[in-house]
Length: 448
Length: 157
Image (cartoon, rainbow over the protein chains, first blue to last red):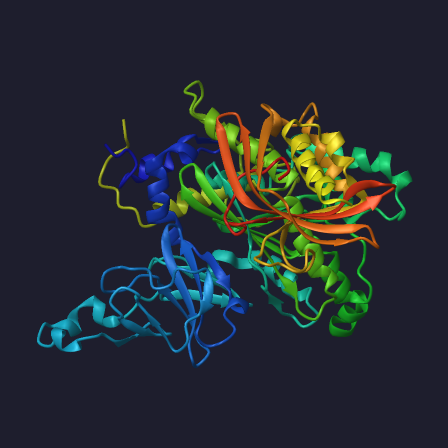
């Protein structure tokens, strides 16, 4: 018997002011409802325009569990389509990216479609004469996702017809994407490499929460970052170069004390978005790259250039499931596979026109922190897996999120708070509850 | 370097890994050595193309020390590994510079707790003679499914 379907009250009851019920992480029905409601109701990242530069280029993606196809048409317009043949449902494109030429052709019965999704041809077309085919959904070609937005080349889509506009949904949180774009002297980013893919046996929301969890790095990553600091302290006298290796520059700040994270702050925005590292972050002390400041000053003037470069936000969560790190040009996509399985794809962006050192650094950060071979990744995944197991315990069905809670806490506001607050997690769950139930009918009374 | 020495050296490396003699394993590497796991087919550049690993001795030492750390929770319980190697193929021997290149097909198993994962690929070694000892200058691991989403890989292939 379904406990949560069509039961707004029961779903809302999973999120309290200071805690959430474990079912949000472990219950299969809740996961199914996330696919049916949460993901279609919100704006989900599906790709970057630099991946489809030429007509015929396409990428495949997902919104929740629904396969999506994004294509560049011959007039250079971008089209977001459901990736299924209108005939028998076969996925039209199965590769992550490619170029289809002038049209898509279904491999099963050779129905073909223009790169804007419209039906081009069907073999033995006569067989549909006088069958009323013009009235069938199949005659319309690939179903279109009407609501999509290309913001500075980042492509987002919202599947449901009703819902917030892109601008209302993201609001000022877009400033993190703006900052990452501004870091290119030409104001452009590009993806030129596949993402690092890392399978996690845990619920997707654990990963999202961890992005603004500043009380875990010095604890969970003592084994990796702490060991890195210790080994470098010992070995540096034998090192030929006296400059701290970039690897240690990446690892060491993870061991910063609570006071550092407290003072650098968290900024929260409406609809579950927020970021750590407001006045400084673990990314603030990387070695400068020669020639870059000059380039940026020429483009923006000294003051603006400094503002851009000194805005070293740590992790920005775009609810529901991406994180952007402007200072190292990385976007992580937390793709839900099942209630206890999440595929993480971590993308690096090349700052067009900037010294290539930045792309090298981005790729390096990605393999040090976001790879299945990363010792930092090993630390985190171990915690998520233990939580996924531990939450099966009936001893306590609630997860506590009340650090720095106060009684008159407001949701859907913009504010800067203490950097060790769990308010950003509460903010995410407030948005979760809102968008899970936005279009949910309430046929039943509360369960039990 | 003689052929049988080279082949013996490659088997010895796998033996040290499978018996978890990490410090002795590190001693097989030259001071400027790199351990590289590409993430693309026929990858040519470890730095400007995405790699899974490209690590020098400092980073490999950090990994080895981490494995035995008191607070390394992802090693409680500990991982174990197992290499099955095909006979190494010697691609070239340069007598003058005392270097050689080999390629060895492998099946690698890593296990921890109830989980057992298996990987297939090729290990390429660039070897160099240092004070009459064979050392690894570059070890490169090409997996057949380099583009798959793996879970944790904590030991060395």
